Length: 113
Image (cartoon, rainbow, N blue to C red; front, side, top):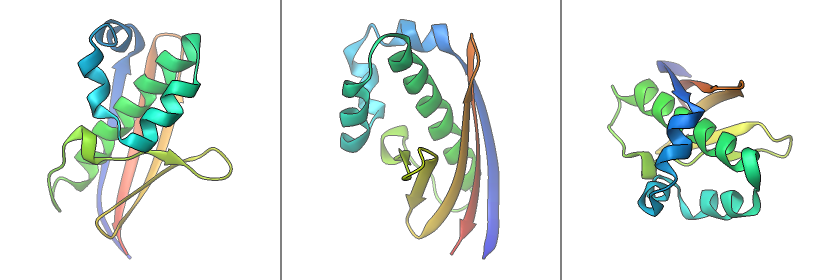
């Protein structure tokens, strides 16, 4: 395995909540992510979306030397333990997402398999 890059992003949850007012903001989600999002309620829905936004940004930063992606091309799902999981074009991407009262932060590390 070869390390391609590391990315980090932090987002203010209130900024994402405001962006949610525009239905078009959800276009950053893949079909699978939209299914998960639609099952969430209340504050958890906002935190989850902020975390996914930060994670997608972190992934894009981690893989920029390999290829550029749109937010909607990056899919962040969860494994059987609820940990974030991302695979793109033969790359394994380790992702970590955390939330605090006002912020969501994510780190991503991309390795070539």
